Length: 306
Length: 259
Image 1 (cartoon, rainbow over the protein chains, first blue to last red):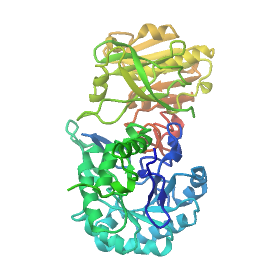
Image 2 (image 1 turned 45 degrees about the vertical axis):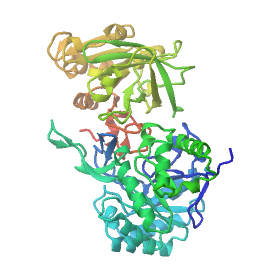
Image 3 (image 1 turned 90 degrees about the horizontal axis):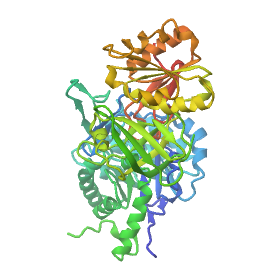
Image 4 (image 1 turned 180 degrees about the horizontal axis):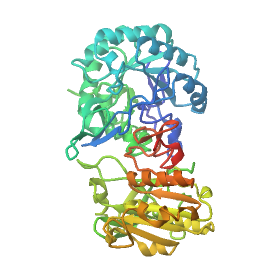
């Protein structure tokens, strides 16, 4: 079938198909090598990386909620030096899928220093700047909840990071479209949304919170309608590509995000339920295009009929 | 690490044993891959309002000739109760085999396998492998009362079985740590391989440290992915947070921060 699945997000980030895997749900990609051909995906976004190693939050970090989960991992990672020296060499075997690094920090200087290190890596064409993690005490989401602080960190990173700069937005704001416009103005090449919704789970019998941090990030199909609405609003507000995520579990879900205005999508929590879901979504989007006699997946972006 | 798969199994047999427990025998469509004792499977559960994630279940027994995996499941939660509704010839998807399992080369020639509650489940296949390797397998199995002692005949076919019950309806009255094996008799064993409630495992850990006998425990933290990517099931070790699913579930007690 001659359908074209490739998408170009600009500034050197070309994907062979619009399906990426969301940071924190796909490890470093190679954890999935037993189950799928990781190199057949559009892109993988590896675990949130910070300047210094982080131990993350105390156990328990997980609550199962209706059609979703709440997590409070807290950016556990071994730091950017370890990533560059020990993990990235193992990612060079992926030649067709694009590998992005999710970059997080607790102050602007940390974001900048981490992005500078990643900028040196030839096999990494883009970073996803995480200004939206709800599970760390300092920074993270704090940067993504006001237009001014979001623009500040993006413009600081923009000065040192020369490749594609994707910015991941939090839904825990009054107007996500305003934040998106602010980061576009500060030099972002694309935006991805949504990160997790701040949520809470309680064990009534024990009268205690389920997770150690009391509140955490809600993801999974439960958040999909909110994510779709936000992708729709943001894609109307900005001129840079939008990458949609939030509860995608099937090719149909993915197509909905594309129709709402996304140029590409990410699969997150669903990777935990079915380690082969990302490849199934690639195949399902292809089938959709054939069935609807559409030549290129690009034609779906913003193709909602009103 | 053994290669992992996601495979649709067929329910060959489902048997209710005692209230709240099922014995589920699953047939592989072809030939079972290699599985280590102490490894677990992530079972797909129907997506309902109360169930979303897979459920991690330890491997109770592997029959390589029949190409079956048997799971011993306590059906007390929303997810495991749905497994109790399965019927013969139903399909069940597994992601497996997961985790490190027990390192049988460290068990020695006279290991003591200690289980509490449904924690006895992985010890059947473990005992089977150790016996094949020539070890003299001894079990110490604990439960609240006699009807919570599961599949005794299966364990007895592998080794010597001692039991404790909290109400004294079978074996020694009390916890497993009240049994003579973990008191004066502990030095006759070359290792302790343990799975059960955390307080039980911590108490055994103290006995092991005092006597200097190698001790390995299988942890059961709440987990999502089962393959070391979500980082939800961590336990705090002397080398930082480690995933119970991918770096465990079996840990050397000396690596844990248990005192």
